Image (cartoon, rainbow, N blue to C red; front, side, top):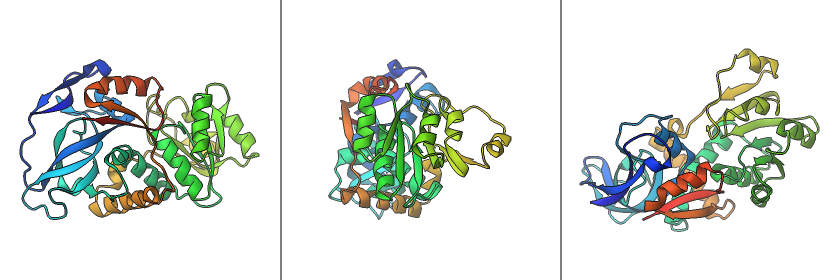
Length: 323
């Protein structure tokens, strides 16, 4: 038996139950992983509340890192003792877990378990946003909402590395300063300023090539006003609630815009894509060009508090649970 955090009933952070569970031995194509660190992400709150459904009871957590303690039949690309990290399936909030072996990627020596748990979902999300969904290049102008969040701080650094002008929104002067320290050239306090008007001012009317939005409902409409004609709106999260339905004609009226709602899961269905995206991430992190700010670590038993802090906008960077 090992400790884990499970959801039996949907609701607030109080429904997270710290309890003992049976793990078992790995079956064909599986590995058993002793987890050293597990990432906490906003998507975890979607599963906890039922916005994203999962059969109950279930163990939360979409990313983690640890050491392989056993391999099932047919597993050849990892072995006992390997340090690995993963994104999906659910089950990260646990001391040990079974994992499909094809979801595990070997960690370079330069990257710690804690770093990996703080970056697999967020860092690979940044990779597909910047390199696949809209290919950011030198001279691009981007707007990233929640620039001091886990994905935001990585996007700020990576987009800066690619030569883009980075504009970020933040909820406080402290968070704005943090975003600037991580590569944002301009920051906007969205609670105090009209961010669409400020974007127009900052860009001298040229507006942005792309808006990356993990906030959703509260910023959707004004985000479209931040885009140049033929620009792209990319929604990848719902921190304030899902984007409401809207008429496609709105995109015409705003300048023949593109709008998309991608997810990492689609990008990493094929193992070759998983390896390519994670390799790109590992390269920029190992080189030191992109740092993974893990500002908050909690004990596994304190997962509910981590959720309260995350939803209360009290956190910046990555949140990690440790056994």
